[in-house]
Image 1 (cartoon, rainbow, N blue to C red):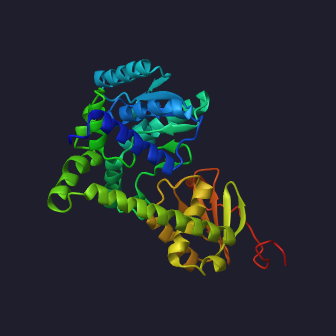
Image 2: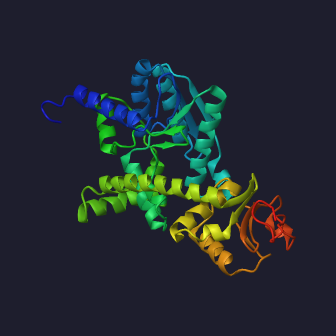
Image 3: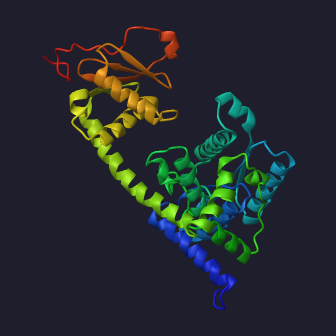
Length: 366
């Protein structure tokens, strides 16, 4: 701490920077109802303290939600009790629930991390929907973003994965601390003499994120770039802007190429589609799959490449199967993506539901 940077100064600076992030990304508007997801760790505790400070000036309604993952026994109960006490100290409504994440992971064939994440967001969304909260705030910070970029890079992700953690998602989920490093958050809590709890699983080296946090990033800082986290964060922001632009362009092409659609089916004109750059065609296909599948879970680059090959070489009347009960058909001039009502293995070689007189144009007219 410098001579002029007293605890109160650091506190005011921290608040101002968080408020600037909120303003930059339009995270919160006056009179919003914000539900803060609080685990009890330093990031989420700092988050709710900042939001509590901003509440009077923005006329916010603020609440706290805590999900007990049922993984750490007495320690998990300690965390829940800590957050409950914090909510009482701040005079905020408290919502909690316990879920068996290990069982959910086994049922849904997911990692513990992914099952826990899905359960948290499902719980937060349920509370927000039933209690009238318009925004859901989480404590993700700049370090989390850098770790996410490295994780996705090592998994072979494309540009979208390298955009990291978005400051705002679906105009509902917000990350007010996303531009602040973890060290600043810890200093803020120290300046306010604010307690928090530590999750012992954050040191478990069986999790990829922890190996990146405790092993890879320190190595990169020491041997390659002491500002690696800031560099990765900057990369993610650049790619996020470009991703937004390219997604917008791909949506325009999708609209131009679509000849028929409903909630379970999308038909694309192959001649119209192949006029565009291959990189744009890839994105259009991803958007088309997302339309009929409602998500892109388990859809990989290899699936997109299979569709491109299928579109180029397959005979009319053939089909290609994708995860999520998605079947892709090809007619002479159309690529059709359809979500089937039954598992694909039960359909066998059933006739495709999309039928078109190939002597007609996309509108069905002679």
